[in-house]
Length: 319
Image (cartoon, rainbow, N blue to C red; front, side, top):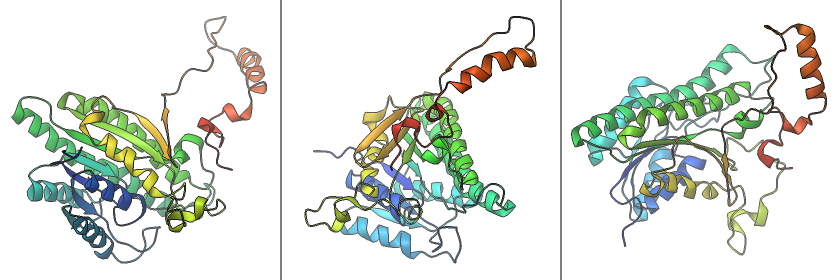
């Protein structure tokens, strides 16, 4: 029986560790040929010298399991290196079918203390990195579609975050980048749908080196992957990877422009923001007093958990 992704080629960025590694292994298990991209810097803030070891280790895992993979050590936030990454997939396997954007760094700081470099570096790696790879993958699929005279199989899975959905006080750069990724995703979905390409974003919750501080207070359930019964930690990246595999497959052809929250055996589909209330002026233009009379009572009776800046958004508060 054919595997869901048999014969398809996937790029997974930031695939040397954590979520990216789990996603690359899952796509390979489902039959895809993998380009494992990772810059290999040891610091989660993007510090340290680049290393081929993380990407090559994952390639070795995939090959040991009978799959096909090659590594790419490069910075996806660099336009030329992102172009080379897509070219590597095409030159190695003939075409690109799946792009999973996962690469990222953290430089957390409260907004009143954040430096320009801390802002720029996170926006660069997350948001520009997603754009760069998407730009060259999109051009590849557009050319293929024109040559074929119809739609092709193209899948983009972007990585956003609940930091964008509910706010994160110490991560204004990260939250902004993740919000921008959702905007990039929906724009891409609209632009590429006619070529057979879908673009979706996920908000994963997983225990990795990127989130070790965030989830430090949440104990590993069932003792993690080494538990006697073999059950996974509820925050293991392996809980996220199956959704990525599904979104990358032909089965998800009608899933486009979506935002999905995923962790611990749960998938939640987020809807577009809806209008919660609407007020019309009794005159030609609102006055201050009229707005005060309408909006102040409205917000006075609205519970705080219904605002965007609350951890209870989507009912996913974890403590």
